[in-house]
Amino acid sequence: MPIEVRSLTHIYHRGSTSEAVALKDVSFRIDNGEFVGLIGPTGSGKSTLIQHLNGLLKPTSGEVLVDGQNIWDKGMSLRKLRQRVGLVFQYAEQQVFEETVRQDIAFGPRNLGLSEREVMERVEEAARMVGLPADLLDRSPFELSGGQLRRVAIAGVAAMKPEVLILDEPAAGLDPRGRDGILSRIQEMHRGGMTVILVSHNMEDVARLCGRLLVLNKGELVADGTPREVFSRNEFVKKIGLRAPDVVNLMEKLRERGWNVRTDIVNVDEALKEILRELGKEAPVLS
Amino acid sequence: MAEDTGTIEARGLYHRYELGDKEYVTALAGVDAKVSRGEFLAIIGPNGSGKSTLAKHFNVLLLPESGDVWVFGMNTKDEKLTWEIRRNAGMVFQNPDNQIVATVVEEDVAFGPENLGVEPAAIRQRVDEALTSVDMAHMRRHAPHLLSGGQKQRVAIAGVLAMRPGCIVLDEPTAMLDPRGREEVMKTVLDLNKKHGITIIHITHYMDEALYADRVLVMDQGRVIMEGPPREVFLEKEKLVSLGLDVPPLGRLSEALGRAGVSVRPDALSVEELVEELCRLKSGA
Ligand SMILES: Nc1ncnc2c1ncn2[C@@H]1O[C@H](COP(=O)(O)OP(=O)(O)OP(=O)(O)O)[C@@H](O)[C@H]1O
Ligand SMILES: Nc1ncnc2c1ncn2[C@@H]1O[C@H](COP(=O)(O)OP(=O)(O)O)[C@@H](O)[C@H]1O
Ligand SMILES: [Mg+2]
Ligand SMILES: [Mg+2]
Image 1: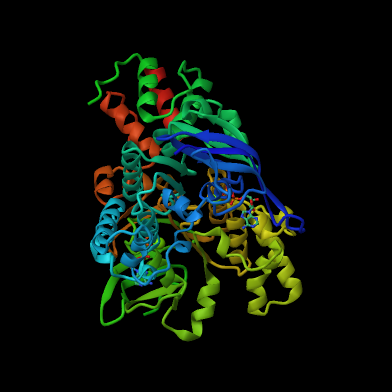
Image 2: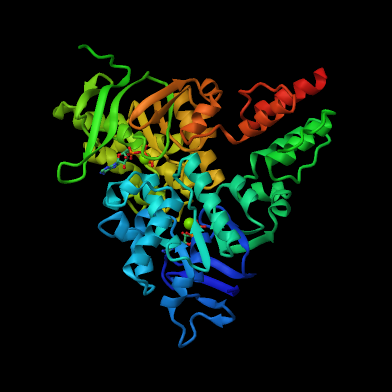
């Protein structure tokens, strides 16, 4: 289910004194099975953009096409669209509202016309996937810690098994194991054929996971390329208020000190190789 | 017991949340922790380990079920002292969007002292000082909702500062921020600690932020299970990983270098430290 955005502009509170242009003439296309990272400083329009992809916001101008169809055309069902394009919000507390965690995760799948047994299977599968201990399922979502609540929000969307999964900072507030866990599960879902769009401020994560990065700044799409292409433009990355992964900054500083190392690297393994080469050592055989 | 008026302290602190019908979750299972005046303490720990519950005890948002909490010599169980303690130990939370009450930055910062009944002229001065300390004086007349996440958090910090606290407790203040916002907030907090001697208690899941602290406290299942200077705590990588925590990102590289026979100091965990280490090794080689 390819998604295409054409000349999308979004203006909040148009005509009033608090008018805000959140997106300016943004165009791109995302094909089936891509894993796309959406990055940009706060206020750059990331959350506004993804809410257009499942019809929560309507373009001020421009269009959003899913499967080649404008989602705002007559006869298109937004409800169906939202089952196929699942969105996990930035603030988990805005997404949970049922009495128990179980009911909350069940809310989406229940609307898919599944049997109660299938719904419960999905709930338990999703809870396992996000690392929610089973004994939390019968608690009220309001009796959870911040990180536990975020897992509930992700489980609720994952339980619907959407074709396109969009996550707005899913790992914010998760402990390192939770973060790695959620991201590996997302990676698995991607390998299973899901298209994934990940909004993140964690440059290490997007560099590692995404095949392609879309970079927003002040409502405009300012870069679209592989993590290597984007992060090797470190000056530009810094200028718009982002920060390349630490290993990139390390390579850059080493170069300033006269090391002959590449700076277009994106992960620890590549950094290791560069440093060892420069020190005249062999890289160990990777297990 | 005469308590130290310079410290914040929890002793034998025990807290359960009631889930209705005589069911309870134990969130703090006997915590002893002490923070000296002027200290920068980082608290790390897996989700649900009790960090926020502990933080809320320092601000009297929660009271001990058993055990005691003293804030600068004041026991939080003493109801007469509740407001004085809250003024002295201000809190900043994760979500930058729901901590700001006013429609203009300076009014938001004035809100606390106004509630305390501070004189208008003195309020003005406090607001000026607070906004200057967080480097937001130039945006005093801006609308908070139009600021970046890092700017909003700095306004929230200014709001706390205007109460002239001895301590600021920050519960994941950077979790929602972009890299620049995180840097701004950490720089601000470090500055308040080093230049103004304000005690900082900083809760975070970003291991590299704990490197700014004088001391790190590691929580698990309602207990403090490790503590020490960050570079010592992060040497225990295996233990941290088994708890669901980690070392800062470059710790992985240091470790890999070590395995490849490049003996960088294992506690070189920031870009700058690692650059120095590598240059030292290269020139020695
Ligand atoms: N309002 C509440 N009612 C019932 N239980 C709660 C409540 N708040 C927290 N808990 C429980 O208390 C324990 C400690 O929670 P706390 O919020 O202190 O953890 P935390 O270390 O701050 O976690 P996180 O990193 O996810 O923010 C957890 O088991 C949590 O589920
Ligand atoms: N509900 C809203 N009403 C008015 N303005 C908004 C609203 N949501 C976002 N904005 C504005 O739109 C711009 C983009 O915001 P947002 O999409 O939230 O960015 P990001 O997710 O990249 O931080 C910002 O200028 C923001 O202030
Ligand atoms: Mg956003
Ligand atoms: Mg918490």
